[in-house]
Image 1: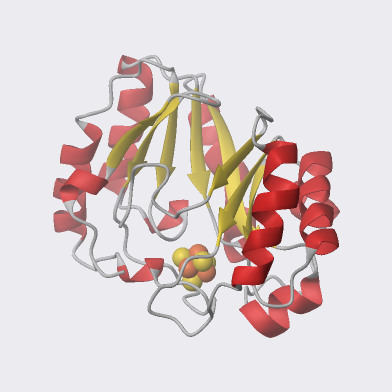
Image 2: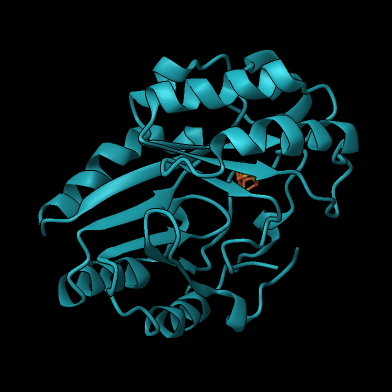
Length: 239
Ligand code: SF4
């Protein structure tokens, strides 16, 4: 994916769980091994440049929905200290009561302190994780997510929301439904991403996507607890 242009770093999601969303830049995902992912190329080790870019992106936040989703092609702890200070300040000045972050499983032990930091100013943190599937063998042997054999119950000890990746070779109607239902059982919200081709070797499976569109999408498209991204840019950020 490489570096995302400025104009694709801010958007508003108005249909379900209305919120503003920003795509910030951090110092990079520390895992970088997920076999389907090239998002992690949107990073820089230049913290000053990251802060300057993130400041301009965050200047667009109005607080109109009192909710802000922060993504950064990695994990919350990849953000520089200046950006974090600015997020805390924006939550207060724009009256944001809920802020969403994303994280890889490897940083799970940092989440409690992160929640506490925002709770001190009265802001609730919702932490999101890309699990892609709860079938741990498929997840680890094929996708290389780096989550070991963690189950939905294990993941729910730390995280509030999950992202699932569907439309992959080897998935079928039953496996996709099972993942969505487990997501709804253990988590506040679920985000289903349909695989699209990128620079990595894993390709979408057109037959699996056809099954999703015909037999699964109609069941959940109006569910307020599920975001479905048929294209990875449906949130209006990223390229
Ligand atoms: S943890 Fe996230 S950003 Fe990092 S490689 Fe995996 S999917 Fe990509």
